[in-house]
Amino acid sequence: MANNRHNRGGAAQSPVSPNPGLIIHAESTSFSGPLPHPSLLERYNDVIPNGAERIMAMAEKQSAHRETLEAVVVHAGVRKETRGAWFAFIITLVIVGVGFVLIEQGKDVQGLVAIVASITGLASIFFYSKHEQKKELAEKASALEMRKNR
Image 1 (spheres, rainbow, N blue to C red):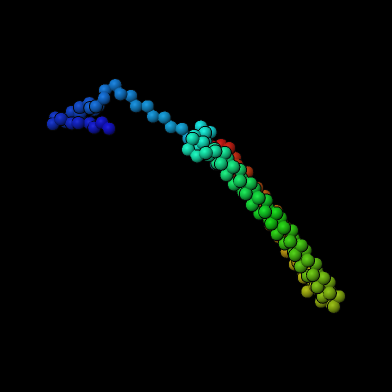
Image 2 (cartoon, helix red, strand yellow):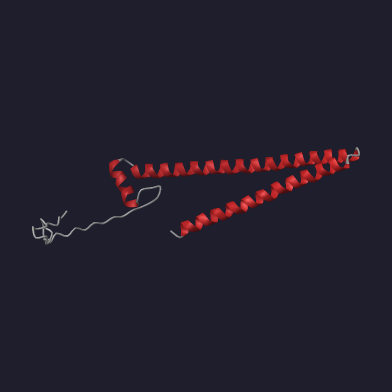
């Protein structure tokens, strides 16, 4: 690293180079991904017997494991949503039934309130979940678009 030297009069002297005419060339490459760059992967065979193949097998195993986990999570999510929908439907039917029994017993206001409230609650949950799904899809689309623009 060159230093600027100042004489007593304050004028700057030119930097002193120990090797005049020396040119420094720096180069940098980068590679991103779950596996090393193919040229580096080839070198693993020199260090570890079948090193490249072992690394590829490890990556394939990890990928299969991740896909299995994703499938389990998606399947569990679908089951949970289906079960929740059935429970909401059953609860709504029970409350509507209670509303009709109340109306039959002469308690028209209470019965009507039970029926309207249960159906309104079910509809509210349905529309709220649809709104949240649209919002989530929009966020995912936005994130995907940002990744494409990088």
